Length: 457
Image 1 (cartoon, helix red, strand yellow):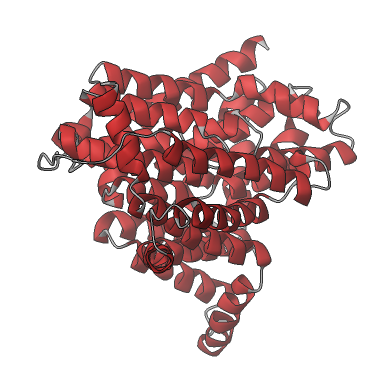
Image 2 (spheres, rainbow, N blue to C red):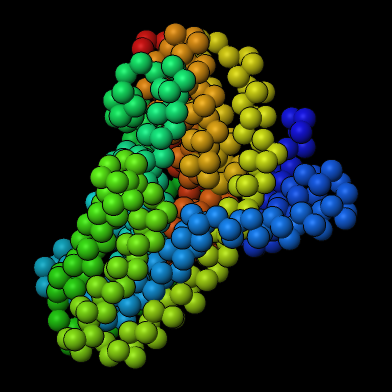
């Protein structure tokens, strides 16, 4: 179809309604409906036929099914761990026995450290950091919006820096495609590793988050974020323990690498991210069954009740993820990313190339709510441009990754935004509004770095 402003309407409508109505379900579904109507060439009968086949096609893709099941199973894992008292044991250990976490700064600092250490998958990072930090925030009267910001700022940014995960697999595959077309002469892995130092947004937002935690750096709506009523953690008689909390986490980390290795036929960078995290959640549930039930921490019945209750809690987020995948497919079919790129890149100069790549990737990621989709759109556009202008390929990759993470970080329809809100028990729209000033500051600094890099590198 012809590329024009019409291609932007579904994404803009979804974003506008999300901010206006605070109902993510209606917002995403409205964007999908309008997008399908456009793709149907405004023919009602054709629209009805396309509407039903669209969702069938989504559910026919194995990676989508595995990702949705992963979301449900994450709920099960978190619920089983919570019901077992493992989080309470961990909280007792760090707050009472060792007297480590005894202030708001240390509570948020702990969530930050968890986010940095658990780099295997952005969703797992947010969920674990939120699960540990939430009861501590209630005790210290810390607004959940602050916890959501910390969880979100250490999920995708860390996953995009430490690429021993699905992020690395995707980017390596996209770069390899450009190598096969003669755009890259060095190895794909070498380009990917070199690009890490150019992921300016990830580095800056991690620094901004540290300032926020330790220097009370409050901006905009964050100043008005309402703290929850002080809630003492009822932990009388709970035995302090690190093992019951740490063991499942280490098991998950080891299994993600193992399944990336298996699905990649011996190469973790070629492994399937969606399959690996799905298999990891299944195996973790089996591990928890044998960890808790034989020791009578949970009965067999209590274990399965927790499994299904956890699924129920994350059913809403699973629906949102499904709708987010839907609007992502709509934007792909409408060529939203290509249209945005063609608008801006036609006016590019050598000096502004990388800054512009960053901005375009940011707009695409914000509009579509997916950094991975942005990488898939922008790598094939940005790398040939850098090659044609005799530029730095690794810097172009860094600009795409930074822009994708920045836009994803700001977008109310992003899965990382939604999951961070859920993990922290914070309203999605409140999270977006309170986080946005920090993301914009980090994004502005990153843009300047890319402009400077374009001049001197």
